[in-house]
Length: 306
Image 1 (cartoon, rainbow, N blue to C red):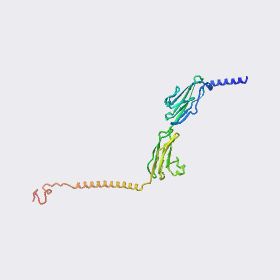
Image 2: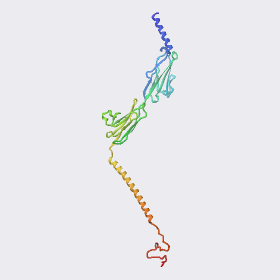
Image 3: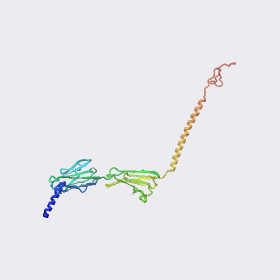
Image 4: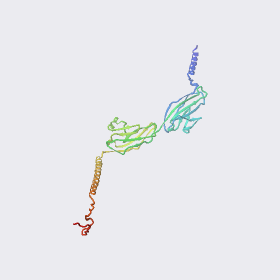
């Protein structure tokens, strides 16, 4: 057998093997691929979803794009025009890519590119792409106490609900970022605070005079960042005189209250004692009643018995 005939025989064998295994040479079927199956985009920025046709024989294949949100598919490119959620916001680019001009958070979904080629032996192929739209955080809500006392504990809070992915939080003191672990910084080694970058909490176990100043929080993700306005937290010394006066006032109040109660009970006791001794003695039979006689106006009411 000549070398040329042997080469032809090998090609025939390879074709038979591909056919038996369910594979079709690229020249006889449509094959799609994409540069990225997971795509990230920033909100209000353009993004292109790639659907590349590596092999096809049909001149005018049918191209469709579907958006799959919560398991429900809907057309975004159908019958050679943009439709659905992407209408007036996208265009099809050769060969089958779709370009979204300004992505929004509602565009986060899965997108399926489908190509049908009726003249190819393998006449259909599809590819699935996941699009996630990053959303920049808005100005977070910060809760910072106006005044705290030395030696007490306190907590500063920061919250933001719009950003996607969920932002990480950072705290600033007098325009300088606080390290998450103060022990790793010589400047803050003596500080007793703890930062939770996931929840935005800044807790002081024991407030020091050096903790006074301006504070603000920053929420940040891959789309951008936002921060609240600086607020001042004052740190006051322990008011020993005030505590003493409050304590003394409290003790004085209870002493006066006890004395008042004791005086009232004693007065009532004396009143009951006097009322028990005031008896009205009625005159006996045959006796003289002098109770109603005025001095100098003696009136005889009973006879004397001799």
